[in-house]
Amino acid sequence: MNCRIRKWKLSDAKDLSATLSNKKIQDNLRDGLPYPYLEQDGIDFISSMLSANEDETFAFAITLDDKVIGSIAVFRQQNIHRQTAEMGYYIAEEYWGKGIMTEAVKQICEYVFKHSDILRIYAEPFAYNIGSCRVLEKAGFQYEGTLRSNAVKNGKVIDMKMYSLLREEQ
Image (cartoon, rainbow, N blue to C red; front, side):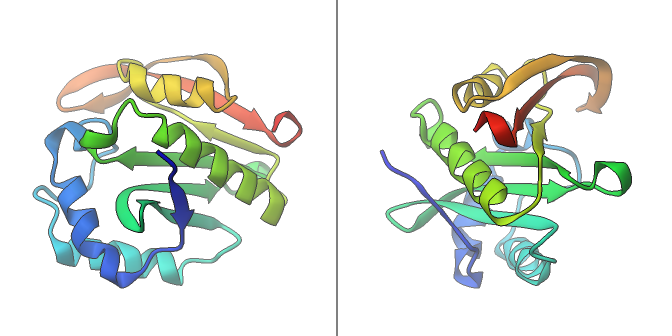
């Protein structure tokens, strides 16, 4: 299955809300997303991504046959980390384990390194999210270590793993 990343469209809100109204997906993301995730929530998110500074926020829909099946974004950090960016992503459950997310990660990293001065892209998946860790490894990211007791999710203190990809490694 070949995926493509592309800029968001407001018409993607319905597909986005269907994907994010899955508790299994939200359990692997940071807090703050409404549940259930309504179409209006998707419109609000897409609007904010479309109006964001394009040198600081690189946000894309993940599509398969132009149907939105997920989201991927890279966010520039600040101050001494201004040439470092954090990546976050998710994909609809029915597409897990098919290599689609790995392909999307490769595409966004290539885009960000080509269109910006970013030197390092990192991601911090929850340590228990083996699938997400595998995505990063297959996309060429290096495991840098475990961030012990680094988050509280669903009332549990959890570890996170740190992965990064440098411009020259791509």
